[in-house]
Image 1 (cartoon, rainbow, N blue to C red):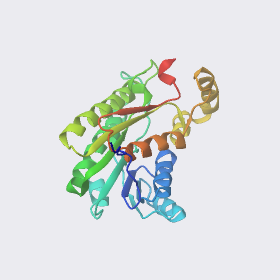
Image 2 (image 1 turned 90 degrees about the vertical axis):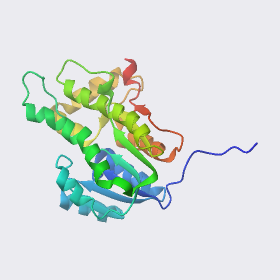
Image 3 (image 1 turned 60 degrees about the vertical axis):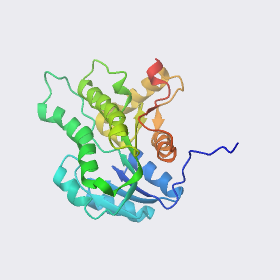
Image 4 (image 1 turned 30 degrees about the vertical axis):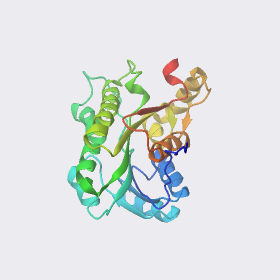
Length: 245
């Protein structure tokens, strides 16, 4: 009996990373490129996107605000084909549902759930018939807390549901989600500011692995999802055991 591997090479494949100029997105771009992929990154800042692509020799770059559908459509208009799409853009908004500005809370869904839908619609048939699409959820989908994370938790859970539903609606294209736990990225810096170091130290001590994650930890899970041809409709948790404690 001949056994066939479901691990697919990224060599020569086109990878589009939305949110690819820093943090997990940049790590995904670098790992995919190291495996032979032709990588295009998209970020919100044009100068930064251009510079990051130049510094790392990526195949291309685009700039647009993921919360602005028309800008995203325009930025992606000349992308010829996408074999692997990774959605990583989006801000982290904390705030109580009864007190926080409603537009700020709505923006969480605009930049995460609706942005993914707008990108899928913009690309249409330019998504390869065997494309993989990886959405980014988070540990809050399973473990929300009482400290202003309700909308973030709801958005993360919605993305996991979207991945499962789209795995059926657009089959045989593969849709998966990755759910990172606490991860040391520029997004965490912006969310916590000066309180970050104390937060990280306290949290790391409570986790089974004794540390929070790195961008490379999560990126390697995403490249796995891109490469594994038998994974669809799945949420892959990369949280250092955070859901267990």
